Amino acid sequence: MEFVAENHSMYPRIGESDAELRFRQAHHDYDHGDISEDELEEIVDSYVEEIIDEQIQAGLDIVTDGMIRWYDHISHLAGKMAGADVGGLVRYFDTNYLVREAEISGALDWQKPLLVDEYEFASEVSSQPVKKILTGPLTMARYSVFEGSTYTNERQLAEDYCKVLKQEIRALADAGLKYLQIEEPSLLETPAESDWVLPLLDELFTVSDIPEIRLATYFGDIVPIYDELQKTGADVLLMDFTYSETLLETIQKRGSDKRIGFGLLDGRNTKLVAANEVKNKIESVMDSLPEGTHPVSFSCSLDYLPRDRARAKLNRLAAVRDSLNEGVDL
Image 1 (tube, helix red, strand yellow):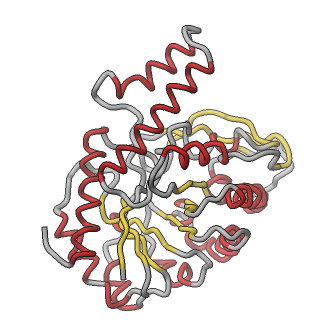
Image 2: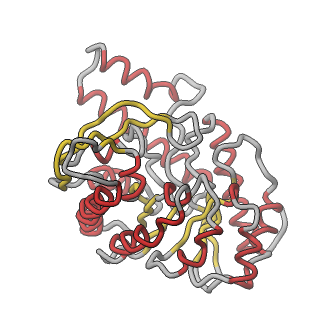
């Protein structure tokens, strides 16, 4: 059994130094006509490269591009789909993070790749494998306004989001993507809907030959649907342990047919938990895990933290990985 350290998804855009503030300054200058779109893109590219390098320097095995080009989990995808427009701001779950809703104006359709360019750039500048993120169909539908459209209910809309996401996954597979993460936090709000949501997700897991697909859930207790998730086609279940007091006990008692992504480091709390504390929790369930590679990660995106605390969390994550693989305390 082996453990790898991987970033969850987003990473803080803004830091403390002038260099780490240039992303915000570039968008300000672009909005005021002081720089061109090409100049803005050049600065954003350099920022993506910097974020990737920050993860590699910390020792991570699998990185993300920090989702630096994303405004949020919803509008970045919906705004590129036919039949959807970018709407107003709403709160994302119980966080202070705001997303722009998708305003549905017609039948959803995939016209061109949504993320392939982002992946190709990130993979070119990274010496480590790059993981890409897609928001799941239920969460996309839940943060969409569809009254007056051709859709009459959330399930119908989610089914069409699934069709679009399947097209995107095929395009990412063709581009050579090895690691994909489907994020479906809304499922934990309404676990009773797993009877129709999980079959939709299975369509995403099986539509391509991407080697490893993670299903990530967070901001809720996963235990009520733990057994159902074990039956899905996901390769890895990336779990938020901060909302589930009995999750470790559940894994111990029921075991896992799936490889587990251990989201034990809190992505919303600046507190830096001791590496040995995290290591001991994972070791307590190792006898219940299948063989293979298991990721250690964060409970959710690190974008909720100051940049310096996010860096410290990256370093701590790598330390946890090392202590597990080497069988030593730190």
